[in-house]
Structures are given as C-alpha cells and as structure tokens.
Image (cartoon, rainbow, N blue to C red):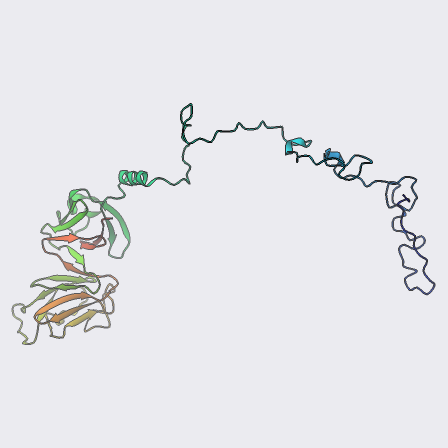
Amino acid sequence: MPPMGPPPVPAYGSGDPFASSDPFGSGGDAFANVAQGDPYASTARSQPIAPADPFAALNNPFAAPPGAPPLARPMTAMPGVNSFPGGPAPVPPSRPRAATVGPVGGAWPPPQQPSFHQEVPLENMTEVRGALGINRPRLMVTQLDGSEQGEMPLNEGDNLIGREVGGIFAEDNLLSSRHATVIVKGGAAWVRDEGSRNGVYARVAPNQRIELQEGDQFCLGRIILRFDHRPPPGVMLSPDAVGYLSLVVGRDVDKALFPLAIPPTGLTLGRSRSDVRFPNDGWISGLHCQLLAIGPQVFLVDLKSSNGTYARIRGTRALNHGDALLMGQRIFHVNLA
C-alpha cells in the first residue's frame, strides 16, 4: 500500500492567473508546518497510519482490533450506561412481580395513597360536599347595588330573617324585628311574611304576567306603587280606567301624577322611553315594566329591566331556585341546588 501522502500537485503554466496565489504551490503548502504526527503532513511515511479510533479511550466494545477486517467479530448487545467508565454505580435489577388478578399465596399489596391529581370517586365527593354543607340550601345576600354581603345557610325547618337575628340585619332599619321566615322541607322552600312593616317583595321573572289584585304593591328602582281597581277617596272616577296607581314610596317623583288612572290600553313605566317616566331614579331602566290590561284584569310585566321589578307577596309564597327576594335594604338570592 503506497504511503498516504498528499497527491502530487501539477505544475501550473506561466499563463495561469492563479499560479501566484495557489496555496498548494511551491512554498505555499498550508500544512507544511503541521507537527510530524499529522497524517496529512507532506513528509513521507514508511508505514501506513491507521485512522485514530475516537472511541478507543472509552473501551468501546465495537472498536475493531488492530489488523482485523471491519466487523470481524459478531455484534454484541449494547452495554448499559453502567458499563462505561465514569458512569453511575451498577444498580441491581429489580425483582420481577408476578402478574396476578388476586392474592396468590398471600395478602393483597397495601393500597397506594391517592395523589393530588387522582380523581376522587363520586360517592366520596358527595360525602365531602355534604359534610361541608355545600349542598345545603342558602340565601346569597347582596346590597341593592349588587355588591355581595355573604350567605345565609338555610336549615331544615324555619329560618328567621329580621333585626333580632343580628349580624348584618341588626342595623337595617327597614327590616322588622321578625320580618320573614324561610321554611325548608326536603328540597322545597317557602317564604312567609311575618306581618312586617315594609313587606317582602319577590322579583317578577322577565315577561311573566302577574295579575294585580286590589291593594297590591310593586317596586321598581326605589319607587313603590300600589294598584287599586277603584280610585282612592277624594279622587274622581274615570269612566274608562281599568285601575289606578298610587305612590307609596318615592324620592324626586312628581307627586302630582298620582293617583294615576290606567287606560284600557295599559301603561309602560321607565326612566326615559315609557308612558310614565321617572327620570331621577338611576335604578330604573329606560323601559322598565308594563301594566297590561286584558278586559277587567290588569297584569304586571317586567320588560327585562336591569334591576328587576318586585311584587309584594301576601302570606306564604313558594320559592324556586334562582328567585330573588327584596327585604329591607338587601336582596336575598335563593339557592336550592
């Protein structure tokens, strides 16, 4: 085998434009100053130099022995990381476990502790929720502006609301001492007015028709109105009127409007886009509610107002999940889930 020296460089003619700048020309060999051990040095070798094995320092089992043809010995299994110098200490293999579906010749293995991300069985979650009182009926209490004031858990049986209960109710001068009672039996609930001075008002569902009876009161914004079929004493009877509205509570209201006769075509009430307007009450929507006359009957209809229309209850009224009650200066949202 001839020596592995660099191939001879042909001479360039005198007319070659690259002759003077050829790095491989005479005296211009870029590797001329390379150490003697460089396999590509220009000095001739008497023996061929085999390429250096980059894995020789790692005792690579796949490295070919000197003078042996490539792959002269059969392939062996890939060694683990513990076979290399400098690697971690050998780890004894783990003991294999028998795959069984039940305890064979012994007891079941001890149960593993559930992780924080492990799903809790439904029956256990139900027990936890019951123990924490999460499923108990309750009233979510808010102020008139919607800001939350907490919640009132409802026990089975009677739950009194009034100033004598104390807490957030103690300083509400619009609440009576014993204002109302919320009764819970199983999954059902009712509210009973205990003869309070200012009453219990239940929110009217949007577009729901509530027939008004003699002396019924309803609230929109900070205004309370009373409905009567007959005019109050001292008021002349209007032959076409289907009822009359009287002002019970209201600030900055033109009191000269009342008593107000309700025509057979009905009336709309609101702040700016209605037949009867209350421009100074910011709690009232532009088109808030309607008095709808159908023959001799008059119905109260909430027109999807922002803050709702509330009708005063008489005696006891059944409650549904999502109902809202206005008592004193607070709104009680019913949660029966």
